[in-house]
Image 1: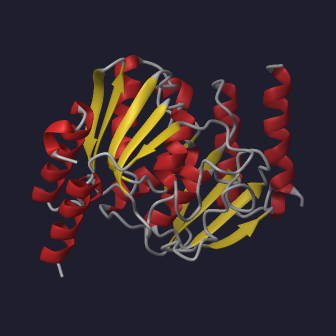
Image 2: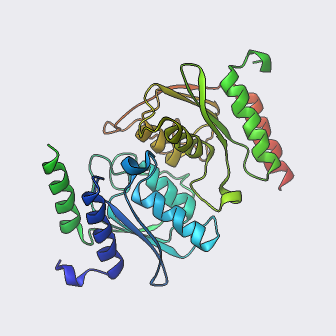
Length: 151
Length: 151
């Protein structure tokens, strides 16, 4: 998929991933939207902040909830450059995210289509609609470059 | 198990759960220790803070990482009054918690012995030692009282 055909929030998430990479953080970016409007955005920042929970998705969700003054992000969508891990998928459930768009799959750390498959157990309280693969080539390239430089 | 036989960190986690209840938050408390010393503590606070990620475990882990200035809580243990959900179990993995002690099981929202069983997939990056049931009677009583009053 050519970059110019990407939805604007995923373009922004990819730009945030690039920013993370430049700061020495694993390149992942996330954007929360509602009705096409950007509510919050973030990039991965666990190293900078000494916070193991500071994944792009957690930070974007926390910022969106603060911006809206609501515990639940009803009618909000999350755009992220990598398949969410178990922690982030769990946060997506608690935040009641409507649609989850992610770019690259993550067979090692992902927990949507891999591993713990957070949205699958029958007792899962909320299931977002999931759209995978939008922007995956660029998202995966950023991750490959990042880890190649550090090997 | 009589209350006086409980380990001190679990007694403290139960006191924090009581505090949460008094504030109208689901009564869950968590304490992070290292070598017997309390590093951080927290109670559930998503309503007060408008933050869907503000579970007791997430807040305690974030505070401990900030206190230690380290992204990973190596050699730290987590004491929590309820079986962690998927989000919190994922955070426990990222934080590299050594031992997880929890009081009550949570068949609906728990993701350690129920649901997504976060520590079980072979690709799980880190597995804490898990000890369940310490203080479960009091922890479960606090939750029952909280939800009974709100029905």
